[in-house]
Structures are given as structure tokens and as C-alpha cells.
Amino acid sequence: MRFAIVGAGFTGAVVARELATAGHKSVVFDTRDHVAGNCHTARHETGVMVHTYGPHIFHTQHEHVWEYINRFGEMMPYNHKVKAISKGKMYSLPVNLTTINQFFGTNFTPEQAEAFIATKGDATITAPVSFEDQGLRFVGRELYDAFFSGYTAKQWGVDPKDLPASILARLPVRFTEDDSYFNHPHQALPKNGYTPIVEAILNDPNISVRLSTKFSPKNTTEFGEFDHVIWTGPIDAYFDYEYGRLGYRTLDFVAETSDGDYQKYPVVNYCDVDVPYTRITEHKHFAPWESHDRTVVYHEYSRLCGEVDTPYYPIRRVKEKELLLNYVQRARTATGVTFMGRLGTYRYLDMDVTIHEALGASREMLNCLASNKPLPPFSIDPMV
Image 1 (cartoon, rainbow, N blue to C red):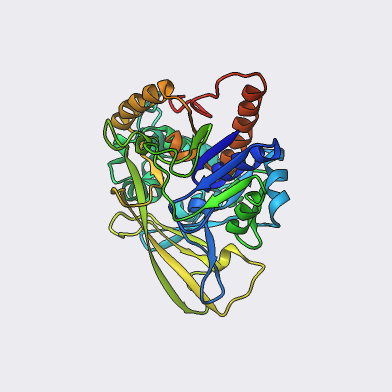
Image 2 (image 1 turned 90 degrees about the vertical axis):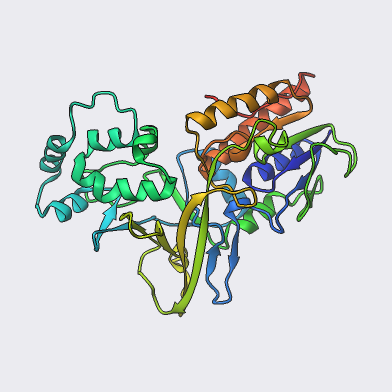
């Protein structure tokens, strides 16, 4: 079969490679002039490897995903550390024993800290509904206001009371001095950046790549005949925004180059709402095995995504979920297309989950082809 795969990020690349290995041909389209999507990396004139669309840290518990990415590039051990500035003072994130003792001026043991934070939490909130409920229930007013409230309001552009509790559920509180941001067994960054890895995945005689090229669902024969379309772009774009546009947050990066070291850490969050940016990232610290005399930093600002902006985070509030359901129902009756990935299923996905789902979807598609069954409309049901 011949597939049109729209999007040259990890989802499109992995699916194209798995289909190619099974003997199927694909043409991969992307409107950008590079592969790897938002994971794209490039060398700055300073020599620093820059994460063009913001930092992407690879971490996973999936052994098969770890083995897969190592087939296509050299991964270097990397333990991600994040700092946060609140009211002019710097702390470690996630909130841990060191953070608690510094913030409250205490010298607690792990057991004492856990008991102390339990007294701070609002026990009257038995079933947290909102982001704020979740924060107040588990860490109390002081830590919530210092590290979560203002930062979240800037990141999402709404009052945390209007966000679901599930967003904060992803952020742990630790009662040890472990300040590693992630706790997965495999944590690493590619020695030469993500873009060469995606290029290597796409390097197969059964795969053609067309960059700076828009593939239109209204004219699928413009580039020849295709048996099936795999769409990893926005699901609402496929249907020409028939029911309206799904909401996303986008990011603006204000780059600055200077000599020496800017902040010593790869990421520093700015938690106070009166600081307009959400965080500052210093890219040379994402490659600690390299040495650079100069540095590149990004001041990162979050705002509502416009029509020509790069979509980053799906908002998925009640209004968007209702709109998404319309597109999902529409997609289930469409023919000749499968929706995959972050944009195609309107979900926030880490890189390892993206690869994991792409591998699973590829297996399912190949099984369907082998048994002459129709290909599924979605890799993962977006409403789950």
C-alpha cells in the first residue's frame, strides 16, 4: 500500500518506518522546513544545541521505547533539574524535603515533613475538582500560592479554579532530598539532538519526505494516489474547522545570547504572576557533555494560540471537549484516514508515550492489513 503521512514528528516518522519495514511505501509531508516537529533541535551560531520549540527531555519506563530510540541515535544520560523563583528566592522543584525546609525555615526529617504538610492540606476538600482544590488539599495554601497558583495562571491563561485537578496530579511532592524532575528509569538527551534521530528513522527507501509542503485533505491526489492517509496534524484542521477551532496554548520565545553562564541551571521557573514570562531556559545545560564559552537563553511566554501560531498544549476544558466530540464523531465516519499523535488526538503527550503509541498503532494497522480489515479511525480514542 501507499500511505500519505501528514506530519514529520515522532508519530509520523515511527509509523512510516514501521510500515516501510513491512514493505509499504509512504510519503511524509510537513509544512515546516525540517523534520522532528516541536522536538526539532539545531546548532546556534554559538555552537550551542538549541531546542527550537522549547526543551524536550526524554524519559521513559518503557523498555521497548528506550531500545527503539537508541537504534537511531546516541542517547546521553541526563538528570533533569528545575529551579523555581518565588518572591525573589530560588527553590528546587518538584517540591521536596529541601524545598519544604527552606521555605518554612525548618529542619524536618522526611517523616516530620510529611506530617507537617498533612496539617497544611485542606482536609475538607475530599474530592478535588479543580487545580486549586488539588493544590490546597495536598500542599496547603502557602506552598500552593508560592509555586503553583501564579505559574499556572500564566501558563494556561485562566484562573486555576477553572482548570481540572488532573493537571496538578502530574506534579509530585517528595519528602526526600531527591530533586530529580522525573523518576523514570531511563532519562537522557540525544548527543546530537532530536532532529538527526528523526531523520534516521525516516531514512528508508520506502519513505519519501516532502518538507515545506502542505497536504490538503480536499485534494489527496495532488501528489499521486494514496491508499490511506495518516493524519498527525490538528484534527480540526483536517475537517477545515467545520465546527470551530479547538483551543491550544502557544509559546513565544525571546532569545538572548551572552558570554559565560546565565543562570547555571537548564530551567528556572518564575512563579510570581507579576513576572510576565513563565520560565527561562538555558540551552547549553541540556548538553552537559559539551563546553561552550557563550550561552543561549529563552525567556518563555505562554498565550492563547492564534490561527498562524504553533499549537503546544491542548486546553481540553469543557468547551473544547464538547467541540472535540463533534470532530471525533465526524472522524469515526470518515473513510481512508487515521488520526494519530498529539494534534490528531488532541492530547498532551510526552515523547516516549508518542513513540509507544505510534509503535502500537503500527502493529494494529499491519494486523488489519494482514486480515483485510479496515484501518481504524484513531490510534487512541481522544475521548478516553
